[in-house]
Image: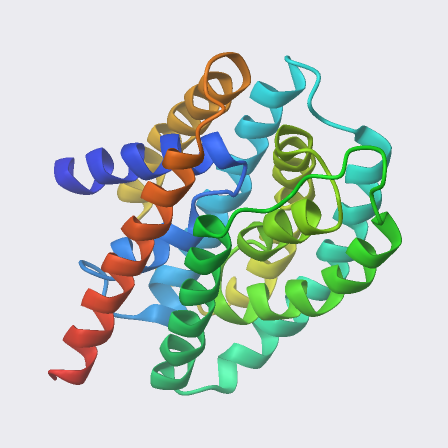
Amino acid sequence: MTWIASGLFVLAVLSGMLGLGVAFAAVPFLSLSLPDLIHQVQPLALLLNGLTALFATVGFARSGYVSWKRALILAVITTIFAPVGAYLVQFTEQTYVWSAYLISVIYLAYRLFRPVQERPGKENFALALVLAVPISVLSGFLGVGPGFLLLPTLIIVGFEVKQAVGMNAFAVTPPSFSALIPHLSTANLDVNMTIWLVLVGAVGSFLGARLTSLYVPSVRLKQLFGVLIVVMTIYKIYTLLGR
């Protein structure tokens, strides 16, 4: 329990700094000790994602980095479409889910490493809304919040990085909980472990958001995060193939 909580705290701090929610890194991390991806790892990761994103939102909002009107519109779209993917995954073989997950991780790492030219004042918010639909369905299918793809999307369409991070943190909170709904009837969670991880994740994500808001402009941090999730996911795929 101690090593799981410690590892999740580190992931929550890092994901909080990027406004992603912790699920994208938590899925491969939790799967190292929990064998059932669909009924244990995904519902726990979605719960943690919603709560960590919520506390990250609070951290960014205190520094004025959340554009509430746009974030709310994004949140409505992601909340509606995320459960579609969460429903579909109930009927999908775990190997296929992990394959889709690995492809998504590679794309995320590519976006985190690739420099993006910001275009403040020229944001294409309408395009971001259109792209949020397939992003939300895919994130529900993978059992993670949509933030891992929504964040680079917001930056690509022209939003300043910290503004994109703040909006993203809020926009991924409701869909994490809506995507959890299809899992509720089949979820198999350890109550004590869940409570501890929720507390650790909430503290870590708020701390991470405040660090970014006040001190960190860091491109290096995004690169570190990309390396971390790629390594964990490749290791998990290796263990699956070795069975």
